[in-house]
Length: 284
Image (cartoon, rainbow, N blue to C red; front, side):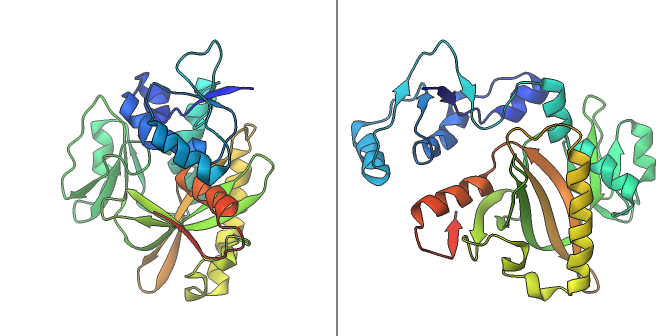
């Protein structure tokens, strides 16, 4: 039997070499009990009542340990640091978009001089390229304050209508799901209208856009997957996209890629396991 740890501080360790607080892992690791059978390395003291509750729902008693000679990462691999950084850096996705010209007015701010390329009359969404999705996003209205110690991504601030993701498993299979995101662009949940058939066509808003626009997106998705096939897909990854309003509904094909487990993937696997014969599943 293997022993896993839920390394929710994956991005922090990957890009900054900083181990996150135990509380960060605790916010996610309980989900492991409901999906996996192997042992979990944890420093949290779960109550007997809670572990009995888990056993009642899953039919199996959780296996826990506070020490282990060998552990495996569950949330993100963290085996080849440079390769994992390439996968997860928002700079990788932005530079790919720039080569394709699918999105205009998209910038990587590496030096103060790069700020000159931004339109002072426009609003931009400013991102740290190395943080977990939704962390420390800022809206710039006019002048951007640049810290030379950090690279930044600047993308046009658009009127987002719906967020969704494509998750690509290591075997190449794909699932599509809608994401619930708050006004700070932080994840709040995932929705499957038909979890037994998690296809693009099953998204609740699919019919709001013309087929021609979805055909373009499907072609773009093929190119995105081809680009990220530069390295083997060992754990799975999400491609985040959204629909926005700009003289009609339009598609933004690629916000970022998360090469790891994601909340959307957990929602799908929990839904399949515990939804039984249900079709519509939400995870919040």
